Structures are given as C-alpha cells and as structure tokens.
Image (cartoon, rainbow over all chains, first blue to last red; front, top):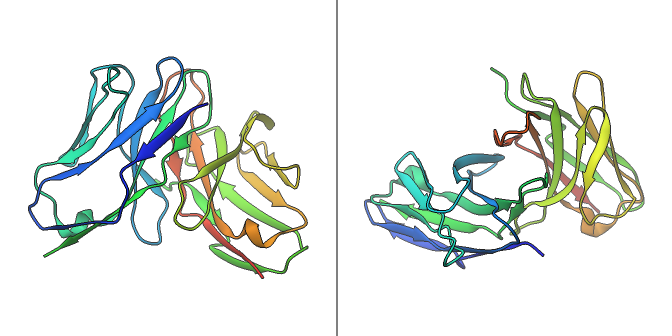
Length: 112
Length: 114
C-alpha cells in the first residue's frame, strides 16, 4: 500500500540555520506529493506541492523536489526563522484516489 | 473569505455515547473529507463526501458515519464512543473539477472520550 516515512523529530535549530526534513514515500504509479504545516492549535495548511517527477514546489522560502529515482520529497529552507516553528507533514495522493496519506509529522523548533 | 469552519472546537464525551461534529467548507468548495489525527500522529482519512454521497472511505468501522447537505456542509457522527476515539478531527474541503486544486483544512474539533 501507500506510505510516507518522515524524519524522526523533534528537530531544534537556531535562527538562520539551514533546514532539511527528510521524506520518502512508497506508492504505485505517480502520486502527487505535498508538505503541510500545522501551527499550534490550528489545522493543516498546504505549504507546497509537486505533481510529477523533477517538479520543484516552493513557498515562503521552503522548497522540495519530487525525486522519483529515490522516491523522496525532502523539505529544505536556507535560513529558518522563529516563526517557522511548527509540525511539518509530508503527504501523498495517488491519481484517481481521494485520500491524502500522511507521514507522522516532524516537530520543528527554532530558537532565537 | 472564510475558510473551513468546524464546530465545536472542543468536546468531552463519555464512553458509549454518540457525537456529531460539523463542518462548513470553504466558499466555492463542494467536496468534504474527514480525517482523524491522534496525538503525535499524522491525520488518517476517514471518508469523503461529494454530491451528498460517500465517495470514498478509509479503514474506519461503521461506527463512523457522515452526511453532506445540499449546501455542501457536512457532519461526522461517531456512535458507541471508545477511549481510542479521542483525537483531533479535521475537516478538509476541495473543489471537484478533475484537477488537483488541493485541500483546505479547518482547525479541527478536539474530542476527548472519558
């Protein structure tokens, strides 16, 4: 079946550090890939997405590239801010299937 | 522009009781999905409603049921509550146009079963 494996957390970084959160997936066919962010007490917000191999999704300084050869969709940001502290979820959706399959989430804390 | 609205925000129920959670989709959206997020876990798909019908269902027992109204709003009902049903229940809306426009999530209903 489909599954998403995320880097174990929590992750703590200093402000302006470089961020990588690893995400790998297992799926048949060519799924769409997503990163969602959840701030404390809130629902999930779509951060970025990619729908085919080699696509790069980007938003608010975050980037992730759909790598079919390594079945990965790692999230990166060059310089994190305290406001980036949140839980980040990697997810996939197969074509023709309505459900999103999520990873377990990675809690990120940025210290000033 | 109002996003997805869920009510109530918090709820405490006793084991064995029944509960109804409500969701109003984002303006212009016609499809509603429900997810269960246990503490420290990623959301798990319960089901999706489109045109007032359940279109797809995840691996949840029949105790979980839903409904979609003509105005696209939706309800999630859970019968015979178990302690393990304690979770954050998220509603997500989208547009069914054959293109992946993505999902908009609400802030959720925190259900505690005691």
